[in-house]
Amino acid sequence: MTNTYLLGGKVLVDAGWTGSLPDFFKCAKQESVNIDTIDYLIITHFHPDHMGIAGDLAELGIRTVVFDVQKSFMHWADVLSEKRNRYFKPIKDDETVYVGISESREFLEDEGIAGEVIHTPGHSDDSISVILDSGAAIVGDMPPYPQIEAYGDPVIADSWEKIIRCGSKRAYHAHWPEYDIKYGCLS
Image 1 (cartoon, rainbow, N blue to C red):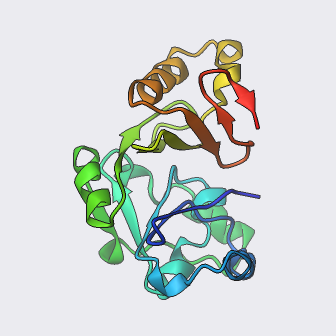
Image 2 (cartoon, rainbow, N blue to C red):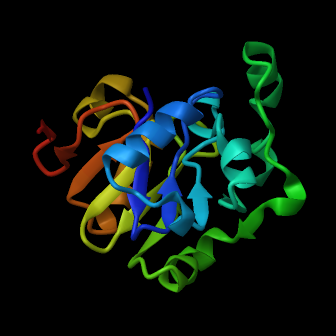
């Protein structure tokens, strides 16, 4: 139900609902992904459908990355997730990697990924987008670019403007098909 992206075989972006770890393993096997090579998990925002298995992944050695603009939100969904599923494992603060958003390019470069992370509020105040130099933008639950006028929200419009200024050409959402940003066309 939530798209997850793997960058350079080492950095995972978003993790689905609590209890979806078997689905994660199944998908990884289908895509011939070696989970042992994944070092980090970046979460686009701390809603249950994006961070549900972060605790499970941490037990496998995949460290959660939290950017400074997200830190106060990282446990926002814990109570809801615990009520929804008794198997929920919260993110452990002492096992988390904290990165300043202004240091994101250096962090990604250390993993062999050319890009940066930018703060893109709109869906939620803690939303971030992973912007790759290739033109790809992993935008989590940002309202789709073709629909921004319908929202009439200047925060959403400003976030999309930042995404485009970074050279993004193609949007990858958590719950929406990918599309070319310039044309707002779905693939």
